[in-house]
Length: 231
Image (tube, rainbow, N blue to C red):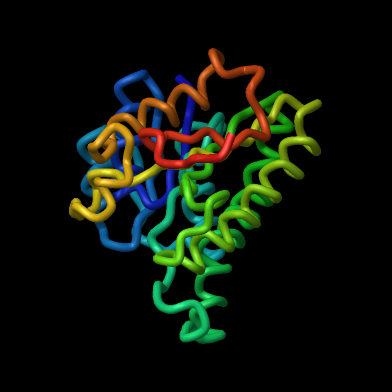
């Protein structure tokens, strides 16, 4: 059975991805700060770790737990919480530093841990849960959209660097998803006139980890109901 590690996996999009992968026959090791990952892992027959994506030791515990249990890591779905929000210049240096830790450095740190494993195995795939606003900046999410544009650059650099080793990385860009309360002002902007579901995000993430997506790497896949306008 293939093995996946998932962060931000106690609920929401990360939790839905864990359920979807487990239903498709994956072993899953989950991380979240709330304890929900442990509960969900118990339900799915996986491993749950309580910890933060901003703590390198917690990330190492997640990887070690998966390796100790199953001896391999075939995929990763990397999801995080939301960085601080506010008016553009009112956000503090500390807010921006928190965002960097949450959005980019956690991915870099996990890649340092799992890339040698995937190289030794002969391949693997990583999906980063990003945002539609990475390419169409939204003033409601200044830190998120600024730094997730940086995550897109990192993903392309990583994908190019490790493509020959059969290791793929893609970003999944959700629009407004039903893991958050609906707001009419946002829903009115969506051509489909509805929020997406966490299940729709989970199925896309599972596809990107699968062999069916074996020739897709370095891409930013929008799952946003058409809200982005650029072509």
